[in-house]
Amino acid sequence: MTLQPAYLALQAASSRERCSPQGPPPRKDRGPSVGVNGPEITHTHKQPQVSPVGSRGLSDCSRSWPTLHPSLQTMSFQVTGLGLDKMKLDSPQSFLDQEEVEEAEDRQLLEPEAWRTYTARRNALREFLTCDLSPHLLKRHHARMELLRKCSYHIEILPKHLALGDQNPLVLPSTMFQLIDPWKFQRMKKVGTAQTKIQLLLLGDLLEQLDHGRAQLDALLESPDPRPFLAGWALVEQRLADLSAVMDNFLAMMVPGRLHIKHRLVSDVGATKIPHIRLMLSTKMPVMFDRKESVAHQDWVTLRWFVTIQPAMPEQFELRFKLLDPRTQQEYLQRGIIPVAACTFDVHNLLPNRVYKFTVKRAESYTLVYEPWRDSLTLQTKPGPPEGPPPRRLGKPGRP
Figure (tube, helix red, strand yellow):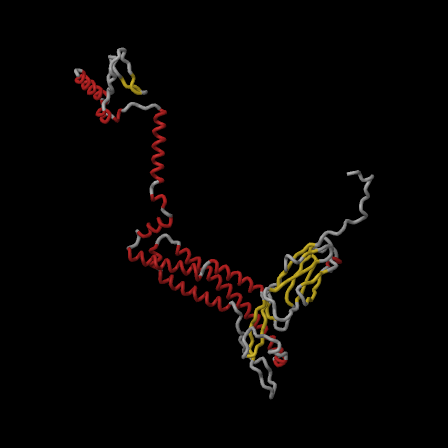
């Protein structure tokens, strides 16, 4: 018990030495000391080991704590790093969706009522771009537009009591054409050609307007600042109405319409009653080769073609072929035009191992006004047998 005042005095002295900015004075005794590697016992006599620093001295002198061993410093740093990473992973902010973060930032720019208005209008615009002007719908319209550019267009002469699609030779006798003035009908064919070209150009322009309008609205929908969106909503509504009208016009023009007749097609026939007729533009699907069934052999080819919608009456076709890259005047004659009344034909007397180009279309008819496209196919015939006698084998065949 007599050692307690000495212990307290020793503890206070050690605390003052460690808290001194000049550092502790050199020790003259061989008492307990604290080194880099922890406390060391330097007593030569067996006495109770007393720590020179108490809990109070440790808290007061934390700034001058002895330097730790490098291995201990590294271990402490790694554990600290793991703790920080875990804290970041456990943060709920790291799991927020990017769109939700942007929405939260946009909400801070507007008042609650303005934000509700912005949300409702934004959803209306997104619904229009998703349903009425979706990318899938525009892709379908582009495909139909490409198909119309490949179709052939004809003039149909119909009595006024018949609708388009009721063309029947029994209903429309050939005498109908006999009553029409041929010269005036040729003029109407030119009008039909011009009207068809204009209609295709207008369809392409309307489709381009739809693509451009959707791109503009999509960029406005993805704008990060909601204030310009609300300020220009009147223009957005007008743009939506314009695009809806453009879509209606595009769909209406997809079907060829009636030809406008300025003059009477039927000449004055005296006492004969003049029939009431009307002229319509009709569309026929393109003629296309069957790539799988059309094959080339050594000196002939088998060609097959089809029409997407089979006509009620058999049609006449025109098949053309020519040799590509002729080398002589005789080879230049390897071409021709063949009328065909079916959807298949074999072309013979071709040169082996040569490339030929084939095209097919409908034959010229009295009512045809416009046919801008024809399908083409390139085939190479197979090589012929080698020239000259076959080489002889020398010696006798060996045993297997």
